Length: 232
Length: 232
DNA sequence: ACACGCCGATTGTCCGACAAGTAGACGCAA
DNA sequence: TTGCGTCTACTTGTCGGACAATCGGCGTGT
Image 1 (cartoon, rainbow over the protein chains, first blue to last red):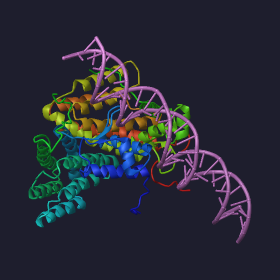
Image 2: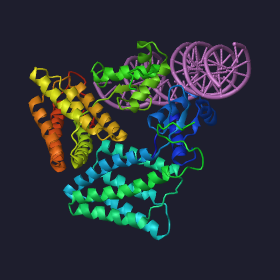
Image 3: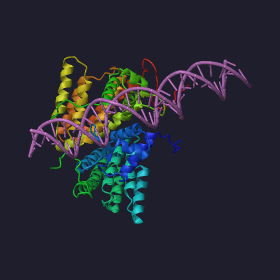
Image 4: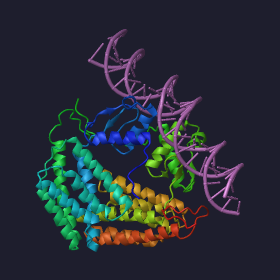
């Protein structure tokens, strides 16, 4: 089981490629995506391009109003805060449940060790194992829907990161220490403590993200995602 | 603001109508929905029918495998448990946060009063205000994503209910009492207690639903949604 | 300066067509 | 009878072209 291959339809492939281009930053937030553009760039029929765009708007990777061209989503500080709030709700409750049975998922330990290792060798490509730490905690509950929801939130976090092209700086050593602390609290059965710790842990990341996303203007197109109409 | 009218495109209307037909039970679980059927029944082009079906599969109202015709989703006991578990995670954490500030949303009180009123006059159309009680608690946090996630779960609960055509029976008086208890605990600042109470409250509903969904076979087509291959 | 109307670009919807895949019916052989 | 291969009808996936509706901008006339 779990053979890596999957049959992908054409629009599946389109969706995947476009989504990847968005999270990688190749398609900056606010970039308009015309059906014709997509269809010609990939050499597919407009119907297919259209389907892909529609699916991505369903996933909230793109946004589009009636009769207007789809654009890559732009996430502002308010969005970051909302994402992290929701994330905190879900994850802290999960920590409580894990603490009840004192289960410390092995995958979480490994992910944290990986962060430490990367830090030791001077690399800053931390975001991936960091995500893995958190998702492995959630996934250890084996609830399809809980996992799906958390993953969708994690994806939005990735989108945020894509917007500020790796400018944010949070020190790996603090992260590793806090992760370890959380795992210890779970093992000790202190759900309340673990939840509190997580709250703090995520709050720091959240404010850092929100600040760098809203404080300084990006290289171009300081389009605020919020409903604030830019005074013309 | 909040003028009721919304501009709906054709496929939007299709999606809405089909979704409504599914939650109302008019389209039973497992019913196949051919693109051609939909396009002819509504007298629209196949492309439009196709788009509607695709969006509904994205919403998990329909399911479809590669090259096979879409079917109305069938939810089994395992799904019910998963839905309620996720629901409990989200909602209990929300209760804790509400208890921190002792905020009791007025809408929740009203919804509960409405249940009581309906019960007093002998009606059993309780599920709607019951849903409103819970969603108003969530919505009082004003977190777009948290609300969206909870609403999607609530929708799945409605799907479950649609499957057993109003056969389930949970006594309104217990519901009202437990709701009131939860609100009281929030007002008292006892988040832990409120969460525990909710846990119990939802567990009862969950097991009732799961039992009536899995215990007896439906009128026809006892297709188990789970991966369990029916011993042939 | 302001209202108005036209125009290009883009979306929304339709039609018809064909390849490819699935599932069930059919028939043939052991 | 049972098992297996084949064939066929139905359905999906994708294409191309077509046209009305809509939006935003530009120029024009008053």
